[in-house]
Length: 287
Image (cartoon, rainbow, N blue to C red; front, side, top):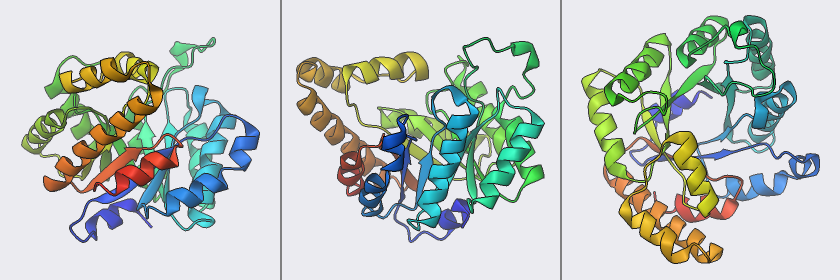
């Protein structure tokens, strides 16, 4: 089933969705059924599966394999991530055929990161996600989600211009959007005001990830451009040498974000659960 149809048919309560990644180690990948059983217990509307690190064909195949298992073995709607920066039209067409043959109805179209090991940037055929969205819509009947950035894309200093790219994705055929993580809901509400002004009508689902470790926070700041509100900085300072309490405080903080977003009538809540079922279990009840 297309996720866009699920979002139309909700009962007024935000739809809960989760995001996981294919484990790097083969043993963990083969034993991921235990994780999926726990995730199913929170009744997610869908589970999104990221591309593996590096974007290699092997990792991309694991994304499709895991998304297929979620859908066909566990009966949960799934969404496979699909990147384009290092792809050719032929490779994308092949992946789309594999995705549809696996019974998957939904993809998240992303530009992706440029491979670091000897990739020839002169051979890039897709520079932007909206180009991939157009390709998917022309080549398949899949529901296509795209990314949105409440604080603006890290490569774009102008928030208004960043939202214009979201409009380009909608015009290219994006059916709904999932946002990058953010730690202050005010960024999301400001983004939504701009999106409404620019006639972006496709559903926009806020993405929430709890603070888990100091290194994770540092990574988010430098790779995603996420800002840290003072309340979160104080928690990080208080618990930086106590990982268990830091995770507990991070989940509590994210839970308050989710409750506030739910009161503001968002269509859904996308939880970046990071293959940690306890995060999904504790945050889903806050919706």
